[in-house]
Length: 119
Length: 136
Image (cartoon, rainbow over all chains, first blue to last red; front, side, top):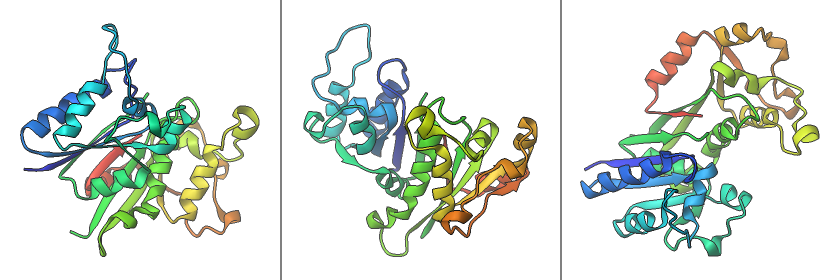
């Protein structure tokens, strides 16, 4: 089994890239691969708890919690989150907060890296 | 495997989005990644400016005056200061009519590194030699 690291910089709302990232991560994890997800820029909104699932919008809290239960490591850029008014106590439990070197370190040991850019 | 080569391909213009800034900051973070790696493991980054990405390198940007944010020029200078290799696509500079003397350097900060203006073929070679590509 391999190690897949995905960096996602897209927002949850307004783009399907983050939604795609979560689905791809689930598929890879279900196949037994180790998956890491780095969230930066607008992607950091994914880590905020108490998201309301309105049917016109993508939702992430439930899939994120399921991925965490599967052992997927999810980390978001602390500076990007704070700049968007997201505070650590509001984060989904289990989502890590760190800086960009976390992403580089995960890339180091990855077999494949998928970098999903932002807007 | 001790060294991993990463190519950061910055192709977005400055200020229109956060993208090019994030390219710089992610590349600069190689300076501290060793904290999370074992002894002898290294990340070797190369920043490549292509397309509209070359616009990030124009000197005398007034971002603080106009937008109240750190200029992307300062990120470029800091990249040189921390010894990042920075390749700039020669053909794209010519396409935009940007002469070399309009580009930033970090001599005033004491950097040894300078921008390397190279044909696209050389950037292509860097991408082919890298383990992973990160597009910004």
